[in-house]
Length: 450
Image 1: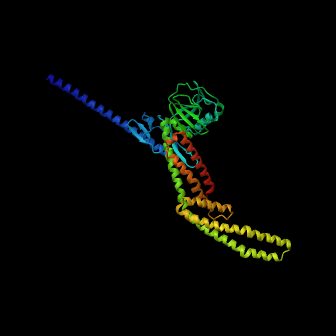
Image 2: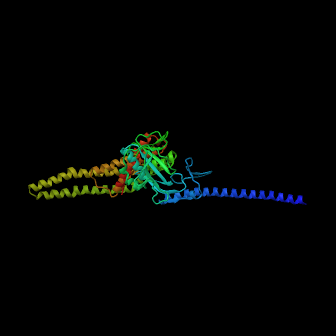
Image 3: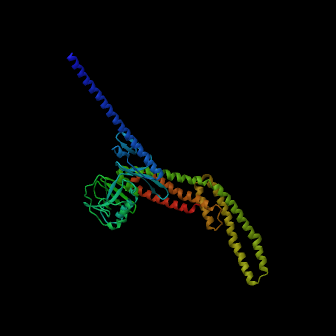
């Protein structure tokens, strides 16, 4: 009997251990599943928050990663964010730097003819700038970068700026660094060459060297060649920068983020340039309406010519008979001017209006070279001093859009399509010239169009 009781006790202990083990495994598995669920939820929440900032222009603090004690890494293959086995692609362009708490802000880059909107998601950080020479290019590149950087002034996750000089921190606001506006305000008093930064960096620090001749180092270095462009160098990697956002991307996420930014931006610029170029074809259909103006202008000019021939000149001839010799000479001079200057000019205008009407009809159907001929016919009317059409501004706008703006956009599209080639200096320069031409044409279009 005692053996039986002992057996029941041992069996109970074994059963209890098995049950407790099962419960423990279940709870552990449930806890792990809950954590995985929280990761997925946090990633989706970030994508939603970045999309909201992009669409509304309103920034926000994002602390979901901090709440689950996890951080997400930028995944260039998507591109998007990855946390463990889970990945979420970006819906809008996002320049991301890993951290538990993030300041999400909406920004835009104005190319002069198109504005590209993007989002920055940055943790609290201190950017240590290390200018190694005292040149206008070095300080100009620093000012361009800092002035375009998101400061996080209205966020708990702020971005501060300071200068690293060998093993010291130089800043008008103390070693913690200044907010963007304060740093820019005191920049003029800091201008000189500094020693190469030898400081041990905190986790929140980002070292950015600036020099016309970057040293061999693993730190990111800005090497300016003009007021707004130059090269980014980090170790063995090197690539041109064309704007401040190239630098921001590299500071936030290295060359992976730089390449992602350029791909996203140039894809949008390629689509936008083709869309705007094609819109000039749509507007050319409005030429049919303007064609009615030329018929009205021809009729009006013909009536002016008839009035001069049949009424004004005979009237002057009649007046001349009763005038003294001096008065007769004045009238004769006026008649001569009408016959040799005004009447030939009106006949020329009638001919030019007819030519314009013909080219408008042709251009409204097939544009192309006909639009170029239309531009020349329109210019000839202006040079001859002919009366402007009632819808002259609309005509000027259509011609400028097709003959001036459209070619510049197509040239820009051809360059932007090869975004990988834009990592070379030659294509980068071609893009800069094409973009400058498109921007100036866009300004001209604003002046011409009603």
